Image 1 (tube, rainbow, N blue to C red):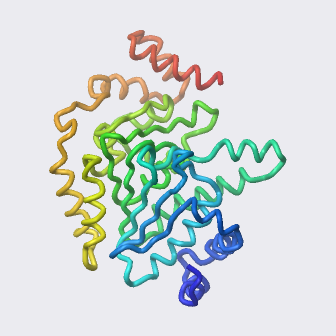
Image 2: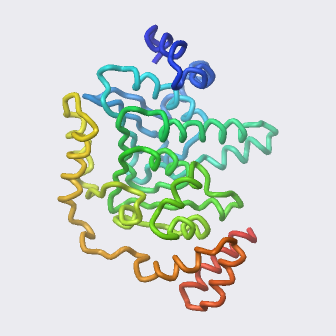
Image 3: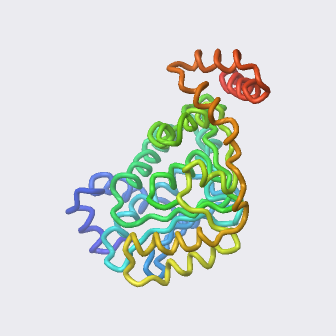
Length: 306
């Protein structure tokens, strides 16, 4: 989006302007071939962003960030764009996380990509949660972990399917649950967020909705129809979009009567993980001694020792 209108917006508007001038320049000076990693399209009433690295489970890299962020400003200013849809290509993943391999290899080559990547990724996450004024719909179909959570959970609408797989696995690689995890995880029911943060526990399908990560659940075979109905809306409001999503959610049948996978353990999770320190949580798990408690202890010790 390098139109005169867009450039004028960057220089005059306060919401994104300063950061856009930085990231927008980097995006426009990057190689054209990088653009295929993320598709930016206008369809119907929506701006559609497609993460397009299916061979790498749409893992997020710096080039993708530098294409998506400036595009937000264009969509915000475009009078014919009423919502933003973000999705992943290939059917296996929305986004499996940040491209840690690329960051690691760059570090070995003495290239300082890590600082740029994390700074700009967090700026992107913050923009989704704080600055976007138009409805944002993330179709979190397939693997959604780490960086993929950051691209989705801060928006108004997150649509899971029976093939969704959510986790915040950062502690297993010696990192903290980032991409805004410190904000959204403690706001889940009870102490669930602390449990997910420290264990990297994986939620699948309708459990992603039951946990409060997704706002809606739709059978995967209906996902294409849902997108078409959203794109066909005429000048929709947030309420119009919510009505469409609610209608599809109400009609979803897969695992409709399934109990939340952690339901039978939630009382204990709330007790164990309410401690003020990790050491006390570990002690709580040791004292309980149940198979479920010991399983989480094993996962946590593995994370701490790796």
